Image (cartoon, rainbow, N blue to C red; front, side, top):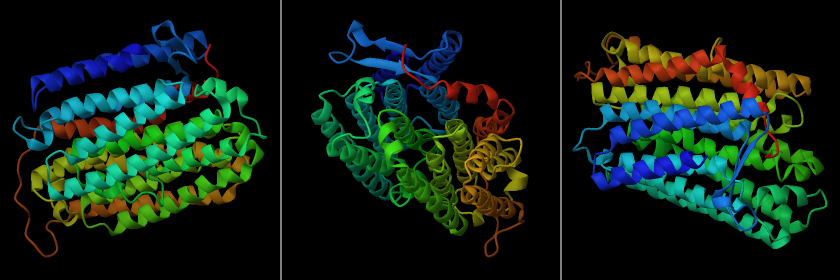
Length: 480
């Protein structure tokens, strides 16, 4: 656990010392080791059967800092390393040494991964706030890289959203400390009851809303399309695949952990996130269908796909909901990373970021187009992809609890996803844009194409080996 936090801090610092544009081999090597460490944690949990804990420096809560890893947090650690590693390989071919947008990509990515790993392992409300700030500020730095006017504007909007979200979360932590005199998650979990003071209910609301803002759940999504749609492809993929999942993970952790007694006392609260998730699916899909720019289409698709994660909240009292959420997080992360890096290939090859500009790419970039189509299979939820498995789990859990309208939302969302995915594929098969001749074509490194294909293929093949992941996600419990 310590290695997963310290190692990215070390190679990120070394990459910064080496200077602008340097550090890609450090990043790839570091992420390879971190992937092995995350797999080792998963194996330890499988053998031991109980969650893992570690008091940093031998000092546990309340005086020191505790780290904890159960099945849910280890699953998110695996997702982070397994997505970041191929994206680092992609970025090593995407950025040239004199590219201003990639000058500090490597150190910022390292600090971002360190923050994500620490967030998933933290067992303390205040330390989670620190990691949220680290993740948010490094993500803003990645969005602003390159210094273009649109990028700076998107970064400032993102900065405002992340600071407000973190501020609401911190205010909630302060209220919890005022009520119970501790910020250790394990201690607070023992103290919260349905008869909790009003301060605790307010803290619950503030922390949930703040994290929803950072997750870009509708209607708090205003910052996401400009940030994800205007950034370089490796940055867009990192943000969409990993960063927004971190705040969702925290919401889920709060609802099934310390605040579970409050949710049990007022079960109607769970329909709030589900209603917003439903609106996100329809609104994001509609905007994706109408988007002119390719990356904006993918960005609005992220808004829509995030909605599925929040459909599980009314189902948390029954079996299968957490597994459905984890599988959806994996499916979306792999597929959306594949889509963004495929879009990066299209843009580099054609020099434009429009859906209309994709005409003729089926002959020029067949591997990349196939990768985009495979990722679309996952987003649509077609078998045998991980997206199908996630949506099947969600539908099954909904039917068991009699929530038919959630089933209709899932099915309608799949049809809407098909509309914007096939819109891109149809355009790529056209011989020429409607009003302009074919755009000039520039060859791109094969590494870029095959990385997109590998991520998309992983999103499909995970559906065939999803049992192990769902078993891991089941191991949610107290730290031994």
